Image 1 (cartoon, rainbow, N blue to C red):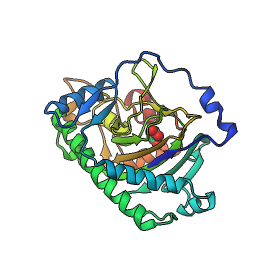
Image 2 (cartoon, rainbow, N blue to C red):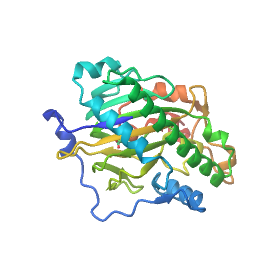
Image 3 (tube, protein in one colour):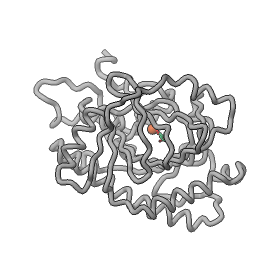
Image 4 (cartoon, rainbow, N blue to C red):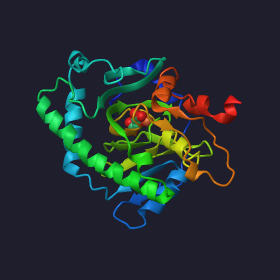
Length: 307
Ligand SMILES: O=C(O)CCC(=O)C(=O)O
Ligand SMILES: [Fe+2]
């Protein structure tokens, strides 16, 4: 879960200033209605063209969303010393300003939680936080699995290729530099505050209109590799909003540590070469840990780059 809050730190204002403007008349972001029979085709098309789509009729009860959002808001309004009791984000815990260990900074506060562990955080009512987290996670997991099953079905691959996932949740407040998510997919939801932008294949940026009733799905680096580049992990960023605090909750579906990530043979067309070397999620995470947020972390695993 990532929560991005109101900018509080003047020296980070450059994050806002240095962002190039997003396109004024952007193409429409694909919307997938999960209740419609053709949603799997729309998902495949959106993953190919944008690496990103919005999901409506997702089945996650609004009350679960609102409850966790309010618990997260309460957490982020605690005094710093209370928030720090969640421990440093190495990898799970509370962090602010610093994103990762390599000098990236953001106008951001975040709480990163491993989903199968009890959150060790000092809210007024930890039990209420725990219940809200579990309800939200169970409902979002169900939706994420449904989407991944449709991806598998649409690609005609075995569901286990994408469904063997470990989950984590991040709450963010405010601004975050450009990057791709390393996991298989991320399921993002924010309050009704703008800021999220995605990069199109031509390199231009478009703003994603906020919609607090819907979820947004990002294709991550792992799915890009499994599909041998047919799906593209979407570059995205969050531009700080100086008027309103933005709170987002991101559910990441990543592979287990020992899982091998490699282009799936059944997805290779004709004599298409494999673009990536085989690696484990552990190797990828280890390599990503030494990189900067905006780096192309897949570069070290590309076959062409290596030869
Ligand atoms: O807050 C957001 O909407 C996106 C944050 C994000 O991209 C991330 O935490 O990976
Ligand atoms: Fe992200």
